[in-house]
View 1 (tube, protein in one colour):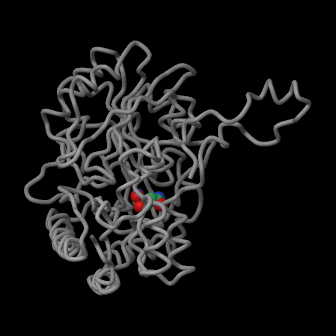
View 2 (tube, rainbow, N blue to C red; view 1 turned 90 degrees about the vertical axis):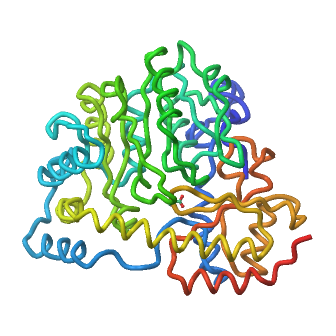
View 3 (cartoon, helix red, strand yellow; view 1 turned 180 degrees about the horizontal axis):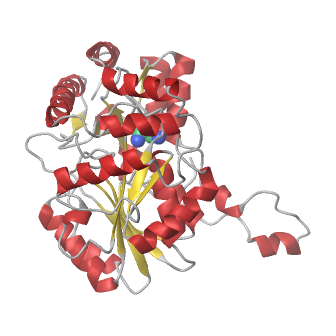
Length: 407
Ligand code: GLN
């Protein structure tokens, strides 16, 4: 794997001077294909249990499937309004008011996108100018790397440190400055399972206010919470209404990662810009699936309680399996991943260990370095397990992992 943020060899101007025409984008040369998604392909090739990419192997709720079937049968099959079908935007308004106590305007503050992946990219492209900096907590979900490069932002990394993945307030404050355009916060966090506390979010808020920056928060795991952890949206904090941009989607909450229905909630000014980027990137998300989204977002509170409960049981099962196999685990408070320390296995690094796990043990994971800027950093002795799988899958992985020999 190549480091993501190192400049490629030679500038476009140098290439021209040498008489070499660069046929491909230098921006794109600065990142690799997704390691997470590559691991899924390798898992299939080696018939490994896939605990790499975070998608569930169990079905979504029947009423959500039925709503999609019905929408197709009713011929809801043409383009939706580019920024999202009205019933879905109305359902989003209701749900955000119900869960976060924040009233948003469905006409001026919502953009429905093709998954939260597109939402994040569209947001970045809508607000970043050359020279702007984006503060990113590290380890970070790997997409933010290419998001930053393609939008042209300069990343400023701030460490989340084990065992509780807390950050140093001075380090964070030092990462902000007059060039800071935004901070990206993912809570509940992938890959660490950290859930940012109100105090932490308020500290971040104060820096955003001080430096006139946006907080772009990826809240895709908002309902996957354990041990009484509470999800607080950045948009719900006093003083953040005009600078919080919330990225979210149906994938994780409703077990439909393949539907690609997401959204960005932002103040009217940024929303206008986000909608323009979104329109020319994708025109819109799948119309009948947006219709099903409007049904999903109105599911009762009991749905979300059951979802969290189900994942809590899986987390505990997986923690038992991994600890038994010799991994040092950090217990997640949210999301559905476990970051583990692998130093007891004596592998050269995380990539070598992940390769060994896939090819020899038969379990696919994500190498820790995919979540860090410097592959030689702490990620080189970490791997991430996803536990959003039926218990049989987790047990099958457990059986295979029991062949590992920790020192
Ligand atoms: N967010 C999930 C993960 O981290 C899936 C990413 C993706 O492939 N879109 O594994």
